[in-house]
Length: 163
Image 1 (cartoon, rainbow, N blue to C red):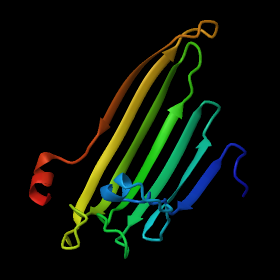
Image 2 (image 1 turned 60 degrees about the vertical axis):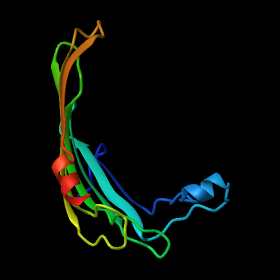
Image 3 (image 1 turned 30 degrees about the vertical axis):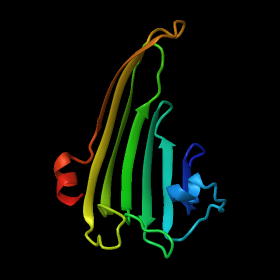
């Protein structure tokens, strides 16, 4: 079965550049060094979406960051997976519209990049966005909307315990 014309899927994989030089002394001394990519840092994932009706659309996404120490660079060994979804209804004069999005992130990270730091700390984060709006008549373009966002993150307890 062929996908609908307005269904799309984007997949990617990249090894982000490490900006070099990375130490303050080399930067101050104007040391020239080419940036580099390495399999020790990879970011990949996908994003897809489709329209359920003329104004209603849905999107899903999944991203992964995988990092480990290399022979040249000590890292915090970040390993995260982020999953999310979005449901939205496009504005139209005289009607309510909305945009709802949420994501969860799970994984692990080290408190420092020190070689002696071998404790993997859990990562648990979330994000939610809600928006409701109303666009006045089709001949008058103002739109009034209400937005609500939530995002979780580290708290002082976890930093004090592990860092």
